Amino acid sequence: MHAPLEKKKGFSPDQIAYLVDAIAQLNLHEAFAPSNGSTAQGGSEPEMVHGTPIEDLCKEELAKYQQHPLDLRLRLERWTDRNEMAEGLDNFLLRHWGFFNVAPNSPGYMMRMRIPACKMRGDQMLVMAEIADELAGGYAHVTTRGNLQLREIEPKNVLEILDRIHQAGLSCHGSGADSARNMTAAPTSGFDSQELIDLSPYTIRLSNLVLNSRALQGLPRKFNISFDGGGAISSVSDSNDICFQAVRVGMNEAGVEPGLYCRISLGGISGHKDLARATGALCTPAQTVMVGAAMLHVFVEHADRTNRKKARLKYLLDAKGVEWFLKRTDEKLLEMDADFQLIRLDDAHDAPRAPVNRSGHIGVHPQREVGINYIGVALEMGRLSSEQMRTIGKVAMHYGGNDLRLTVWQNILIPHVPDDQLSLAEAELNAAGIATKATAFAAGGVACTGKWGCKFGLAHTKADGTRLIRHLEQTFRLDQPLNIHLTGCPNSCAQHYIGDIGLVGATMPDGGEGYFVVLGGGSDSDRGIGRPLCGPIGSDELEAIVGTVVGNYLDQRAPGQSFLSYARSLTDEQLPSLLERAS
Ligand code: SF4
Image (tube, rainbow, N blue to C red; front, side):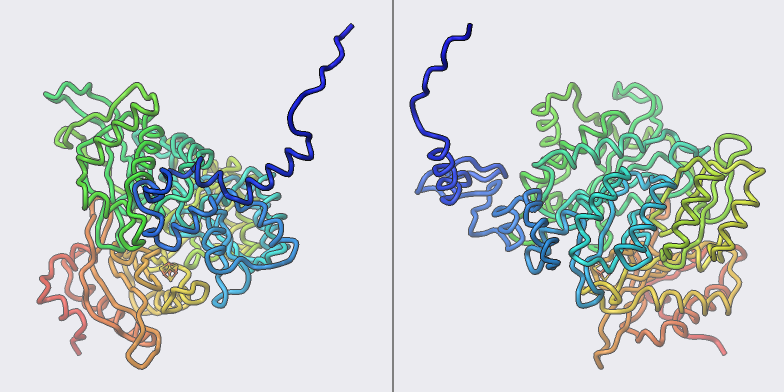
C-alpha cells in the first residue's frame, strides 16, 4: 500500500501561474539570464551583447536582442490567422524563417527555400509545383545560390506552406536576413568524374547543425558557406565567407601527411570587391562541419553589431587579421570538445584544381559511371512555370534517379539518366518548353530579381537581361563561354563583379533605369574583380552598348581567344576603345 501523499507546503498551482506571469511581464529573464550572449551586471555596468552595449546596437541587432528570430513562431500563428503581413522590423525578423514581405514591388510574401548542397528530389519538385499553383504565384525562380524562390504568397497561407514543405522533407528556414544562408556544393557532387571527393554530405550536416543551434541563428549579418569538391561545375566559392576547397596535398617538409584535405579561404564578398582570401589553413573533409560551426561562433562573438555595412566577415578579418581569426577558431574548437586543430600549410604543395567546364551546366554530359549522364536544362534567367517544375520532377523520377541539382548559374541538372533514356527524357523536357541546349550567351546569363520583385532594385534585371541575350544571340555567333551578370543594385546578388560582363543597376540623371558596366571579372582559376567600363547607361542602350563591346571583341581577338582573356589583355586606358565601333 502506498503511503498517503503528504500535502506539500508552498504555492498553489494558481499562485504559481500568477507569479510566472508576473515575472514574465517584468522581463526579469532577459535581465538576469540572457540567452543571446548579452551580459547584465547590475546597475553599474551597461548591458552588452557580445561586448557591444545595448544602446550602441543598430536597430536590426536590437530587434534580434529583444526577440530571438526562432521565437517568432507564436506571432506567425497570429499573422496567419489574421492574414496580416509582417511589417518593418517584424518583416526583417520573419526573413529568418524564409518569408519576405516584398511589397510594393511584388504582392505578398516571397519564400526562399533552403536546399543544402543544392540537392533536392524530383518528387519534392512536384510538391513545390503544387504549392506554387495552389498557394503562390504559379511559378518559381532558381537563385544564384542554387535555391528556389516562390512568390505572391498571402500571409494566410504561410503555415500551410510550412507544413507542406516539412512533410516533403524540405525547409525554408534560415534562408534570409542574418542567417548562414543556403550552403552550396558543386552540383555534380557524387557523380562527377573529375571531383576529388563528394563534399555534399558535410554541406548538409553543417546546414542541419546550424538550423539546430540557437546561437547560430540571428548572426551579426548574413553568411555564405560553400564546399567545392573539385568537380567540373563551379559553385563560385570565391565569393563566399567560408570556402572549403578539396585539394590533394603532396609531400612537404611541414610534416603534414600527404592526402586529401579541404583548404579554407575566408571573407569573400564580391559586391565589396573582395574575393575569399587564402588562409594557409587546412582540415580534413570530415572536420569541415566542426570548423564551419567554430568559425560561425567566432563571427557571432566578435563581428560588428553597430554598423551593418561593416558587419560581414570580411570586415572582421580586415580589422583583426586572418591569423587572429584562425587562432580564435582553434580556441573555439577546443571549447567545442573537438579533438583536432586547424592544420597550417601554405598551398605550395597542393595539386592544381582540375579545370572548371564553364559550359558544363547546360546540355547532356557523361557522369563518372559509364553509360550514365546528367542533363542540364537551360532556364531563362532562372524562371520556371509550375508546369515546367512538374515536368522536371517527373523526368527526374522516370528517367533519372529522382535526383535534382540546382546550380548557382540559375539552372537545374537532372542526373543519372542512362544512355538509352536520354532521347525520351529530352523530348519530354523540350515538349514542355524546357531547352536542353543554349547559346553561349543564354548559358552564361544570370540575373537577380531586380526591380520587378525587390525593393532595392534600380533596374528590371530579368527583363533587360532576357532582351539583351536575345539581341546578342540574333547578332553574333559565339564559340566561347561568356557570362553576363545583371544585378539590380550594389548588393550584388548576381555578383556582377565576377562576370565577364557585369551590369549593376543605377538611376539615370533623369530618374530612369540604367546600369554601370564592368568587364573582366571571374571566379575559380579565372578569379578577379571586373574593371569599370562605363555608366550609367540607360536600360534602352544595353543592346547597342554591350553589342558594340561583343562585336569589337569578336573582331579583334586572337583566334579562339575567350572574352575574359581578351578583356584582361587591355589596359585601363585601352578599355574605353571597346565602346567605339569601327564603321
Ligand atoms: Fe534585390 Fe539588389 Fe539583391 Fe538584386 S542585388 S535581388 S536588387 S538586393
